[in-house]
Amino acid sequence: MSAPKYRRVLLKVSGEALMGSGAFGIDIATVDRIAADVKDAVEAGTQVCMVIGGGNIFRGVSAAAKGIDRAQADYMGMLATVMNALAMQAALERAGLSSRVQSAIPMQTVCEPFIRRRAERHLEKGRVVIFAAGTGNPFFTTDTAAALRAAEMKCDGLLKGTKVDGVYSADPVKVKDALRYDTLTYHDVLTRELKVMDASAVSLSRENKIPIIVFSIHDRGALAAVLRGEGRATVIKESA
Image 1 (tube, rainbow, N blue to C red):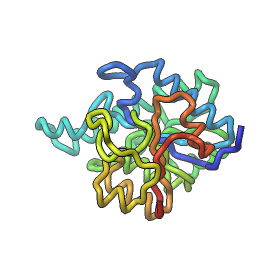
Image 2 (tube, helix red, strand yellow; image 1 turned 135 degrees about the vertical axis):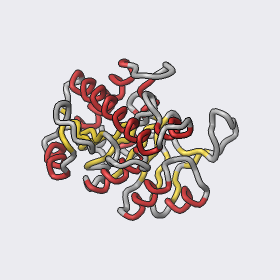
Image 3 (cartoon, helix red, strand yellow; image 1 turned 90 degrees about the vertical axis):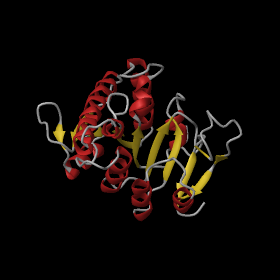
Image 4 (cartoon, rainbow, N blue to C red; image 1 turned 90 degrees about the horizontal axis):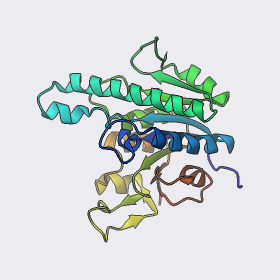
């Protein structure tokens, strides 16, 4: 097996990815499969940290549209990400990996507070670090949190695991002839308003020269393949 191209990466997984075929909540088999992919990546020599969304449990934006104060709704969504992070930690440890959850909202009973240097030390020791509770502030998405943590951890790549194998010109589920891109620039994503990550996350990645790699989290072995530079994915960087 060829060596991984990336020394350290941040893997962003949506909360919806944890649902499997369900309508909400956490599907344990799906979480275990993702954990197995992370284990393959770590055993190949890549340090992995993670950010997991909370959309399978609670969506702050949707709740705000229904009358809940936006800031309050976002804090509720942050708590949902902590639940997902703990579920992923349990799956990683079932797979035989040591892991730590660090939350931007301190809750010492269940996880560590986010401390950058401590997180770096965990990664150096081969542990997977899961960053929970977003940035700790309302009005920021978990995509932005992922880009922020990737910059703080000096990651070589920001991997976004989605339901499709890259970035398309339109939703390939709804538009059968949607065009798939192998490479894009940050500028392309922003000017074409492609639904990859929010503009803040893309801009932050561009400022820190962190490539964004979009791939299917549902394909077993896709993560390790992408890390070797062999997988099917869309790479977003400064020049295509």
